[in-house]
Image 1 (cartoon, chains in turn yellow, green, cyan, blue):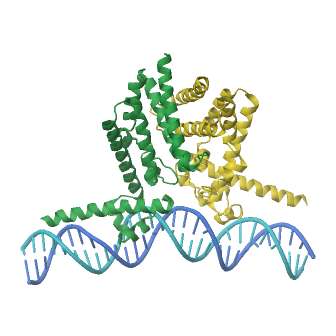
Image 2: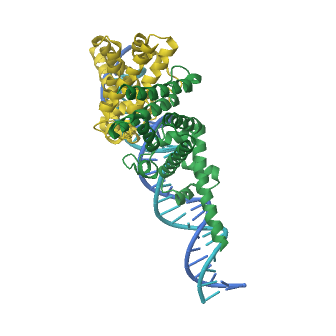
Image 3: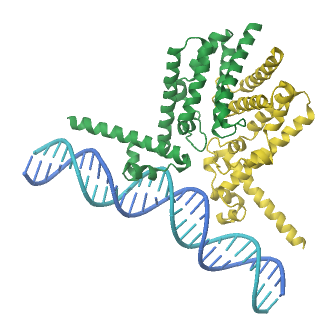
Length: 206
Length: 206
DNA sequence: TAAATAAGTTAACAAAGTTAATTAATTTTT
DNA sequence: AAAAATTAATTAACTTTGTTAACTTATTTA
């Protein structure tokens, strides 16, 4: 019966391989160039095999998206363990996010429908974001602790925080940071500091 | 000879019609569903005709992108005429941008490779952004006037400004604003205020 | 060993972008 | 005004893509 076990493992591995190859092609040639047949070329099988593992091409992307969110979530947890001060945490969430996007741009693209990575399924169906992982939460908590204001207002700050992060990252991804690519991270950090600082001000002035 | 004139005009009109129909389909069904054949169905011609007007499908998108940048640029000029105070201008640029994205999401998508509008041609070839129109400039000027710091630092603030704008808009476009869609604009405005405010602080504290 | 199941391949479809060949319409030239 | 040349448009066809159906080959089960 370890035969069956082995089979299951092999299938699991092939599934993973499909995901890996898709990523690999995306990272080399962009998501437009990820095709079922190219994937199959690399996994040494013919095209219909893929459909034993994924209902459709879109499901491959979706799986990668989900994996991306889970991974970021775990990175956030690590930050939570390592840092306690809310402003430090906020800063580190943002750095984590940035690093993730730099390290795995293809995944970031598929997570946010950027640069030709189209995967509509969960526009509207935001379950993945809201239930599987709520990537807002850690940031929200920290802003909550720091701003000491109404929940509504903290939610607003959180949206603001996310917008800065996502804005910078996607601008950087599209090469639209004018200050130059080498300075991009520095500028990002300064902007974060400025934002976190502005929460302080609001607080102290109150 | 007014025959030739008329012909030229007709051609110009058909070209424009192709662009309009492409937009129309994108706005109704998303960019994934914009196909040459569907465009032709609506302009009452067969597919190869399109290639007399556009080298490729990508060129259609590119033309729309360019048009989008030019339009935003003109809107910025209007703001410049209407408002003189740098902080007011900054605020109005951002509102202009937001309104544009709300009014023409398809165009915004094609301008920034969002939501499946893929048009790579000018990744790298940033000429359209830099020479045809330099959408950074109006914001940059105002930040310059307001912050009264080194050029490098102002450029940095500009990047920050743009990141907030683009971050909010694309988050909103992807329905990721947690505070709720109706509150999105309000939150956006507050965030802008917070940013503009933070420039002030830096200034006065110096 | 025969029957049932699983795994994989080949063949084929439809839709998409694109190009070539061909026909229809118009303009130009004689 | 008729023939030649040019322009406009269509049909046919090619390639690539996602996807499915039909078929073949292996493997497991009885």
